[in-house]
Length: 87
Image (cartoon, rainbow, N blue to C red):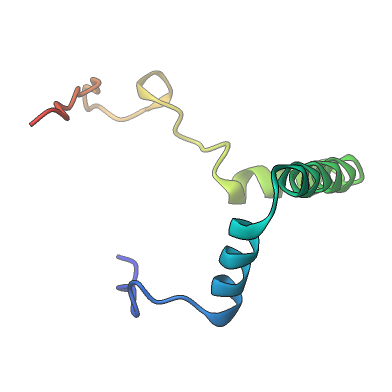
């Protein structure tokens, strides 16, 4: 079981500064920031090896060994459970 989170509701000075900076930026500045992030991600991923790609996909949780009921090898009968969110 993961450890309990401490300091719920608190944030670091850096996080507060980023939040206020992003709240005050214009739509053009936001679009430019997000485009720069996309370009950086594309450049980084284009230069990674296949081994690095495998590690990244596994650590990001994109690809897991268990991929739904059809990929499961246990004897349990899996079914989707619909939850009622209206109360």
